[in-house]
Amino acid sequence: MKKRYILVAVLIVFTSATFLVARGFRSPQIPNGTLKSCANCHVSPGGGGVRNAFGQEIEANHLSTPGAAGQVEWSEALAQLDSDGDGFTNGEELQDPEGTWRVGQPFPGDPALVTNPGDPTDFPTTTSVDRLPGTAAGYSLDGNYPNPFNPSTTIRFALPEAASVRLEIYDAAGSRVRTLVDGQRDAGLYTSTWNGRDSEGRLMTSGVYFYRMSANSFSSMRRMVLLK
Ligand SMILES: [Ca+2]
Ligand SMILES: [Ca+2]
Image 1: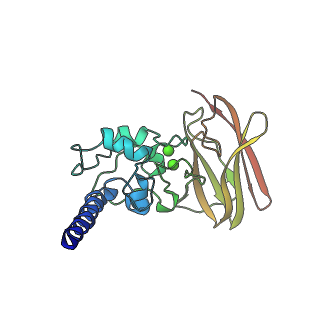
Image 2: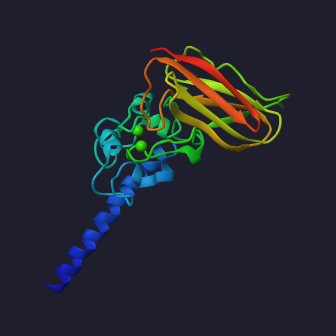
Image 3: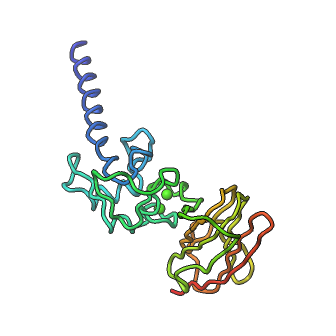
């Protein structure tokens, strides 16, 4: 009798281990997938058990073959969905908004900005700010491009010296809807992209918006139009 129990116990351990190993190969099949690992697709961070909304979407529609052996097929279509309903697409959360990354390529974007596409409480709160080559002759806040825009637009600014910078978006009523930059930056030329969403991830409606930058004693505000 005892032997039989031991055999059953061994079998259970073996099959659970196989289960975890079988799914473990999937996290590198989505962009930056190894950062959140099993938690991208499972409610339990350790993996296994119940799948979250992103995991369910993959299991239903984005496997090379149904079942445990299926490989995840990351695609433009999967990148454009917002599986967990937090206002950011799977691609935006995984730093590949267009869904063009493929297995074997280096992970795209900035790993520090990756959020979980299956967890609605985890979404981007910071915006990427890119440093451009070249030096700044003076402070400036340039016209955004494109303008009018839908859904996103890029704002360029210049700092002739290191400064504490704030770049904020306001609606036509003067309410702040989003902070794009808030912190110390070195001298240089920068761009920051606004995705047309407020700090809660909600898409803004068509209309006039303002972006205001302050850096040390410099301050400037410009107008832009979101047109859907
Ligand atoms: Ca999302
Ligand atoms: Ca999320």
